[in-house]
Image (cartoon, rainbow, N blue to C red; front, side, top):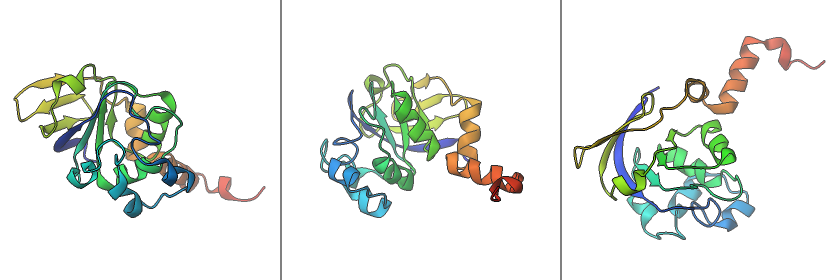
Amino acid sequence: MNWIQRGYAHVLGDNIPHDGGVISFDKVIGRVTDPAELMPLLFREIDPELAQRIQRGDFIVAGKNFLAGKAHNNGLYALKALGVGILCESMGVRASQGVYNLPLLCLKDCNDISKNIQNGDDLQVNYQNGEVQNLTTGEVFFYPPLPLSIQQIIQQGGSIGMLVEHLKNNPHLGEPA
C-alpha cells in the first residue's frame, strides 16, 4: 500500500452533499454503482466541468460537512476508481464509514484546509503522518493522520477485504451450521 499520494487539488466549499453534490440523485435512486458510468457525472451539479479536470490520483479538498446527507456510496465508487484522495475539514460518521469501508484514502479534521489550498495546487500527502505538502506554494501542513485501525482496514481492501481475509483464516465460519 502506498500511503503517499501526489496530485492536484480540486477545492470545494462547505456542506457538499453526496446526493445532488458528489453524484446526481437519479444515479443514487437508480442504484448505479458502475464507476465507468458514474465517473463522467462526478460533481456535475456543483461544477459541470469538474469531472473532466479530475485526473487519477488528484485530491478533492473540501470544507466542513463533506458528503452531507444520507450515507450513499454511489459517487464514492467513482472516486475510488479514479484513485482520488479526500482532504476535508469534517464529515459525518456514516460518510466516514463509507469512505473507509470501500476504501478511499481520506484525511478529515483538516482545519482550514479549504482556505489554505487553492484549485490546481500540486499536493503531496502522507496519510500515515498527516503531512500535506503544497508543492505549488512550498507550505507544509500537519493534520491528524489516519488512525492505525483505519490503515489496517484500508490495507485489507476495506470491509469486504477484511471479511474475505477473516473467512480465509477461519474457514469453518463459512460453512453452513
